[in-house]
Amino acid sequence: MARPAIAGNLAGGFRRFGGVGMRSGMVVAGLLWLAGAPAMGSDYLELQDLHLIDGTGKPSRVVDRLLVRDGLIVRIDDEGDEPTPEPRSSWLRIDLDGAWVMPGLVDTHVHVARFPDTRAQAERILRQAVRGGVTSVRDLGGDARALAELSRAMAAGEFIGPNLQFSALVGGSAVLESETVRQLANGHAPGTAPWARSVDASTDLERIVAQAQGSGVGNLKLYGNLSPDLARGLIEQARSQSLSTTAHATVFPTGPGELVDAGIGSLAHAPYLVWEAVDHIPADYEVRTRGPWDQVPADHPRLLSLYRRMAERGVFLDATLYVYEAMGRYSPGVVADWSAAAFRWGALATALARAAGVRVTTGTDWFEPAGDGALPHTHDELVLLVDAAGFTPMQAIVAATRDGAAALGLGESHGTLQVGKVADLLVLDADPLADIRNTSRLRFTVRAGRVVPAE
Image 1 (cartoon, rainbow, N blue to C red):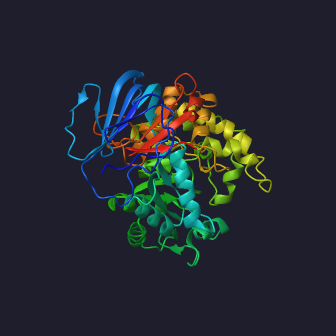
Image 2: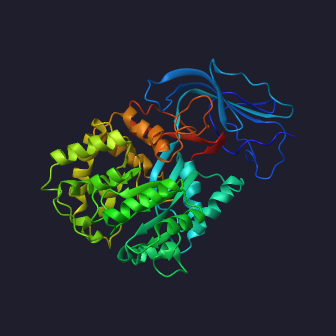
């Protein structure tokens, strides 16, 4: 028998499933692609009558038909081959009545596994992420045990969540002893967990990177209190062991330019780029909140040179504007009188970096919304790229889709809506190219061909 369709009012228009037609407004009972159901043919999803924003930067276009087979896009109008359905295949058709379709959002900077009840909390956040339109995330500091288990559970179909890449965090001993970092590795002495490791000049970098990889991570994050030699050694070892790399834009005393020259993949936190124009960078991660944002212009000659080198070397900028804009209201106990200056400077630096050709991505750092029904803050990051950093809506969408997927090493399979790529997409009730805030006008998400209703 065909697998049943997902609960919820998915779209207007007429739709069919397993040969049965259903009128608009009717609720279809059951779950789409139930975990553990026997494979009987293929699963097809056909979206009809839509405006397609494919994520490549090309103008939107009207599409009559987008067809997905087993999670992959196989045909868009006349592009691709028309499949012949296997016996007992399931086929869900949804008439979108002119809705807008764009790639799923990619958040390149989240922390979902750093809570006391981390497994349950992380699963809740990941479930909510997909319902809110985020289909891929990179966790830049969490409990790898929980994240590996969540990756396994999602791969097994136990719940629908975003494509998940997670990281090992490395830094000097002082930064690994903070309470925040301790929560990433309960049961381990500070700095000794394979995914939360302190290093110094005597550390066997090849060994600790191999141990990090053994914990399931796909990315190495350079955090703080790392000398240029240590930073370079870690980046070289990560590359040789097929891990991607991310670093805070300054890891004290190592500056942005030294990280770029060492081959870093992504730099996180645009405000920390300011230290490129400082003659002496302190070897103290705590000074990150005391950047000279009111003294150093974002178009300082050293910074303009940095942006060009980032573009030439393909280094992504994980700008994280939202966390600085929102820091003052994060918690009543947080005093962040420095964050407004950091935000203003970071927004201008992000604009200048983009103008120089740097690929900017939508990382939030503060990802999860406060309420169960709210959207992930990735949508807020998109708005800030447009309103504060001067991106066009199309440029912001490319940052949040194509370039985010490329930063995660997924550019060949994710990030754009093209034949042969994974069907991670959003169906919107309004045009995000007219107003970037319309990414929040979410009708439903499709994650690898599976329909996930919005909140």
